[in-house]
Every structure is written in C-alpha cells, then in structure tokens.
Image (cartoon, rainbow, N blue to C red; front, side):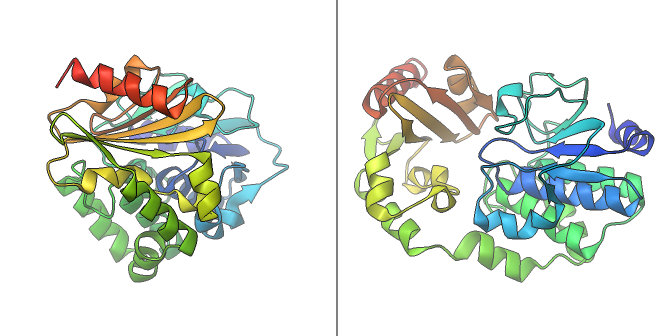
Amino acid sequence: MNIKECAAWLNEHDDILILTHIRPDGDTLGGAAALCSALRRTGKNAALFNNPDITPKYFKYVKYFVSDNFDFACTLAVDVAEAHMLPTGFTGTVDVCIDHHPSNSHYAEKLLLDGSKASCGEIVLEVIKALCGDVTAQEASLLYMAVSTDCGCFRYANVTSETFAAASEILQYGAEVQKLNFDLFRQVSRARMTLEGSILSGLKYFFDGEVVAATVTRKMMSDAGATENDCDDIAGIPGKVEGCVVSLVIREMGDKKCKVSVRSQKVFDSSALCAHFGGGGHKMASGCTIEASPEKTLDMLISAIGEVL
C-alpha cells in the first residue's frame, strides 16, 4: 500500500478506530492523533483507542481524540510493528497499519510501510496531505511531537535530510515548536532527576567501554518516587558515554521479567540482537522482553553481544 492507496482507503471507510502501541511514545500518539484530526475534518467518525499506558506527558496533547466507547467499523494502527505491541485491552484485528519499522511482521490486512523514515509521523504527514490537501496548526504540533521524539530532537543517527524537510514543512503549518521542545526535551520531574542519578551511578562497562549497560530495578523506581511518566527516553542515557558503541537499558518489569532497550552506532545491528530474544525494531534502536532477572538478562545480552564484537 502506498500513500495514495492509503488515502483512498480512508476515504472509502468510516467509524475508524486508531490504535497506538503499548507503552506509547510521541511518535505513535502524535501520528495517531494528527491522523484522527484530519479524518474528522473530512467528516469521518474517528477516535483513538484509550491506551491505558498513555502517560500524562502525552495525554494532554491527545486527550481530545481518545474515546472509551467508540463504535468502530474498522481499525488502523500507527507505528505498531507487531501484533503483540497492540495496546492492552484491544483484542480485534487490524485492517491497516502505517509504520516505519523494517521489522514489521505484516500482521495487518494492509500495510503502508517506509523503513527509510526516522519516524512514523513523516509518513502520516504525507497521508494527511493526500487526504485533506493541507495540515492544521494543531495537527502540525502533533506531527512535530511524532517526528522529534522518535529522532531524539534530531540528534539520532536515523535523521536524514528528509527528516529535516518534513520538520520544516510542519513548522510552516504552524507547529508550536518552542513549547513542544521545552515540554518534551527539557522539563523533567524531580523523580526523574533522582532516577537518572541512580542510573548513572550504576552504569556497567564491557568490552573496553564499547558496551555500556544500565539497570533500572523496581526498587530504584520506588526509591526515586518515579512512575512510567518519568522513564521516557532513558534508553539514551548510557549511550552518552564516550566510546560507547552499544548501550543497554534493562528495566525490571516484574518477577523475572525485564524490558530491554538497545541503542547502537551504525556498526552494530540492534535489531538483530533483539530479534535473537524475540524482539525487534530498527538497526540502531530496538527492544525486547526477556523472562529473567535483571542480572541474568544482562548476562544473556553480554554473551550474545560478545559473539559479534
């Protein structure tokens, strides 16, 4: 499915429920909300599935599009690479998926995929233009949230000239860039600052510092008074260390269950590492879940990385 075909499908359907992924970030939420707004402008009934994982940081931007009791006829997922990443509480099938993850498992009936994009928001921008001919200022702000958060405010290696071109176009449509940059990238809670201190003091180094790992236990979260809302972008913390090629963040989610975030330089394929443990993502930014303690999870990851480095 291409942009034109996706817009045609949207024109032909109504009562569209838009899905975001578990532990939703700015890309899935911003892209989904912007598309929902555009659909409503065309006279369609559309709403976002009320993802229980949405944090206050993002909810204030998308709350006008969320519905608990939406009578839908079809479904569309934004930035959801695999079926198991669909939001908690949703049990149906997906008619269309708009995504930028090369590892997308093709679970939806129709797929609009462009793995060259740094964010799904860039694809949604083109869909909205094909659907409506323009973009509102509110949609532009939502799309800026999508694009900027998925490329670390344009600092990550996934940024291309097309990313900057999309951002420039979004700004021309009226995105509130200064406010969004402050809210999304500068302002953090006291709990987050405390948690970061614990993370930094516990960093571990392997392979002459080419691999830097951080563990975030439930006790660390509790001691800092931190919630899920305070964990946005912690995956990038270990990678700030000079000489780091692969950074790992291991979050203890339950008894013998850890969520792993991997970030890397171009010379290492993060998605291949995570695929080994049933996960996936992008070459330089991927994730997986491992059924083990934080200590065992780290051992497993280091062993797997050692076969490559």
